[in-house]
Image 1 (cartoon, rainbow, N blue to C red):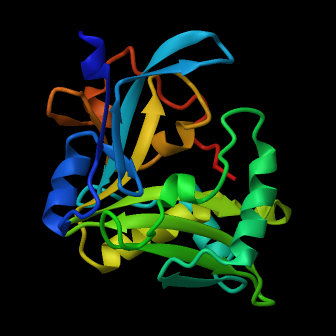
Image 2 (cartoon, rainbow, N blue to C red; image 1 turned 90 degrees about the vertical axis):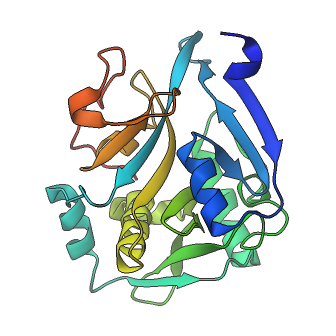
Image 3 (cartoon, rainbow, N blue to C red; image 1 turned 45 degrees about the vertical axis):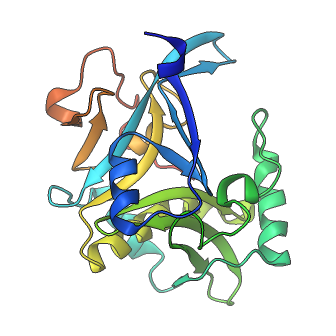
Length: 239
């Protein structure tokens, strides 16, 4: 395959809800108005190239798994969930700076790396999902774009002092709840790898589908090619 077909990028400052659905459905991902469509990735830890697998949840087939229900139930009384317009505050930046100290490589510089210069406006509507503890302290925030029939998870950041609450996974579960409440069809999870990696938490959802880069979304459980690895520990949750 020509190299140009493996790495594609484009810019789209404004997309209608209908158009953004089509773009996400064609395997594209976006950070702000910058869109990319990558079919391979280089893993520095293993020093090898791996295939990228776009993932989404088909909400018509989705049901909650036991550990997902447990997280929602366990923190229900101690957590307030808010969906609101994205605002990059000093508090949020402080949490982000603390959060990225977890990473040894590919450390992002700022939230604008994921949200662009006009979050919530370009290329489409977007919201933040915020978790507050029992003392009204913000301890996790995730961001997601909104189409007509789908949403696309963008990024999540959290206060590492609250890692025991699985905040990264919790915000994603709340995004799914938002999509269900607003009668969306799909939740796009972004990319994973065809080998085990830190993206494996995305592979642990009922109703999961993967994109074959040929225009088809297929069921993860029944049509997954053997060269695509499932999560090594399907019950492991993402902090």
